[in-house]
Amino acid sequence: MDTSTRVDPESGTEEDGDAPYPSTRDGPDRDSTPRPDDEGSAAAPADSVDPAAALEGAVSFVRETVSSAGADGVVINMSGGLDSTVTAAIAVEALGTDRVYGLILPCNKVGAHHARDAEELAEALGIEHDTVHLQPLLAQFGNVAPDRFGLHDEPTLVGNAIARLRMTLAYLAANATGRLVCGTTNRSEHLLGYLTKHGDGAADLFPIGHLYKTEVRAIAETLEVPGFVLEKPPTPGLLAGQRDADDLGADYDVIDPALRLAVDEGLTADEVASRLDLDREVVDDLLARYRTTEHKRTVPPMPTDRRSA
Image (cartoon, rainbow, N blue to C red; front, side):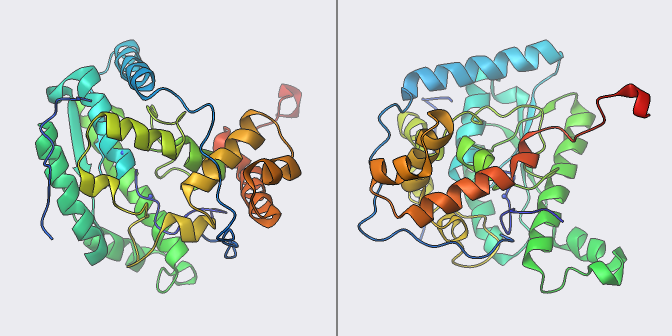
C-alpha cells in the first residue's frame, strides 16, 4: 500500500501564449494534519523563479527530451486543473499541436465536471484528445481483485487504483504512437509525496517537476490561462469538496515557502517557523511528509554488492 498518497491523485492525482483558450465557461492515507492558524500566513517567496524564464526553460526541456529519445511526441493525462493545463501548453509550444495528445480520464460524477473543462482546454490548444470513462474498468478491476483487497469504501485504495489505471492508458497510447508520457506533477507534490507510485508519479518527463505550485500558477498567468482554471481550488477531484489544502494541512502559499526554506536552503524547522511566522506544528508536519515519502523520489533499492546475488 502506498504511504502518504493523496486520495485521488490525478495524473496531473497539468505554451502557447497565444493559444486560443476559452475565456469563460458556464456556470491521504495519513492522519489528518493541522491547519495553520489564521495569523500564520507565509510571506511570498523571495526567490521565486521568473515566469518567462521558467517557461522558456520548460519548453526547451520538453523539446530536447523528446528529440533525444527519438520520440514522435508526448501523451498527457489532462484533468482540467492548473498543472495539466500548463504542462499541455508547454508541450504545444515545444512540439506543436500535432505532436501532443491528451487523454481525459474521469472516473465518477465529480470527475465528469473536470473532464468537461479538460475537453475545452484541449480543444482550445488544438490538440488531438480522447475522453475515456474509467468507471467500468475500475468496477471490473474491483471485481477480479481478491476479496481481501476489496476497493469498497476504501478511498485511498480506490484513488491509487484510479491513478495507476490512468497511467496504464497513457503508456498504452505512448507505446502505440511512439511517444513519451509527459507527467504533470509539480515540485510541491513531489517533495510531499502527494502522488501515487506508478500512477501520476510515473512518467518519462516532468516539465514542471522543478517548479513549486505557486510558480506554476505564475507561469499560468503569464500564459493567460483561463480564469476558471486559475480560480479552481487545487483538488484531487475524487470527492465533492475535496481540496489539496485539507489533505496537506495548508495552502500552497504556506507550503511552498516552507519547503523552499527547509529543503532548498537547509533551514531548521524552528528557523522556518520563525521566518514565515508559522505554527511550528505545521512546519513539522510538512517536513515529516517530506522525510517519509523519500521512497517516492528514488529508484527502488537493490543490493550494491553483486556478491550478495
